[in-house]
Image 1 (tube, protein in one colour):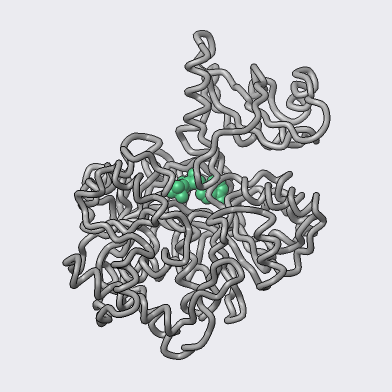
Image 2 (tube, helix red, strand yellow):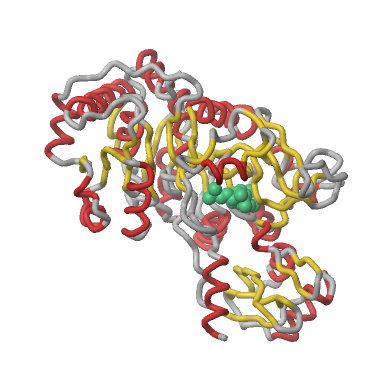
Length: 508
Ligand code: AMP
């Protein structure tokens, strides 16, 4: 089934339902949305020669046309290639070449960057251009292309922190499984609900459009094009029933803004967080400030948004004897997948022991585009090997330690940065922290903490040492504390530990 059937059906049954908003401004209803999508699909076919299975890239910040382009690509039976709009032109050039894109859909402000990346060699379709407007207003609508579940719907390029980015092949089945997983394990969606795209639509946030298309809910694209806490508060107040996906660093900023401004939070329905570690102290603050509005997901491009979920009820159940452990976990396996923790020979490890997380099920990718070696090493014995280190408790709750590449080995002992980070965040003056390893002749690696302070005096090293010694073994204590104005983050709000390690190498 073509995943755009979800839009098509809603457009048939609920024509006049408001579909897309730019801020508080209604852009179009469902009938108009589906009509535009079919006409843009017609343009892709007739004017750009796009056939079923061709790749069409989208290089754009969040904007209402993003949804139109994405569904037009599905509708035409082509494969969407959403590209992080903050990529360097060389990285964009690589993605376009590797995917063999036929067309690049681009927002006007990124037109020049796209040209720098050699996009002139491809057919360019600029949002809002004369060609776009002609397609939207007078183009011939295309009948939706039929798709089988295993046909590739989208190529999601990994961030490439360990080499060249790889194109994750997400099939129509994968996207449908991820959509169903939203309803079973994340949240119910009603017509009066609204999904606001505060995180990049080229990443996980964009995938939540399908569940909201199916239910005929509203799709709100912030006028800022991204994450602005004050704007989100205003949208929640005026549109109401607002849900969003946010990286934990965004949750931290939103909660901070709401605490300072004492803004009303009634208009927020659900905040789904994931994509990186949510520190327990931050979650407690978020719950105190906004109430029971939080659900956590754990996923990766290779199994989008759908490995485990920590439900609202579990986060709310403070009376549960294992609540503290549970809110530090990423929850239980999504209904549609099996999740195991295994050793290096793929044998399941005992309850509570550390190993690699592996996943099997309908949400798991078909493989990497044109990269059989990477596909074989990641999809082994029918299981996706995530590269994440975790333990599972007797109740089935999974606790992530770190990416295996972030583990610090000091004097032969493994140190999981997250454990040290959780402790440092207990200090009231510390607002953000990232712990990495630095090469050391005696110990192999030593622990270095990068810290961002909030209001008040900066704590001294002795104070931080004492805090660590109160909570964790002596050998895990950082050898040095470095105060910085901000941590380096990617456009998805993830802390770039590779960059921190590079800072340390340069400082040597
Ligand atoms: P990406 O493919 O860019 O979405 O990155 C996926 C990686 O982000 C996972 O393999 C995890 O290492 C990390 N991640 C995703 N969700 C969570 C979460 N809820 N808690 C901690 N780390 C997460």
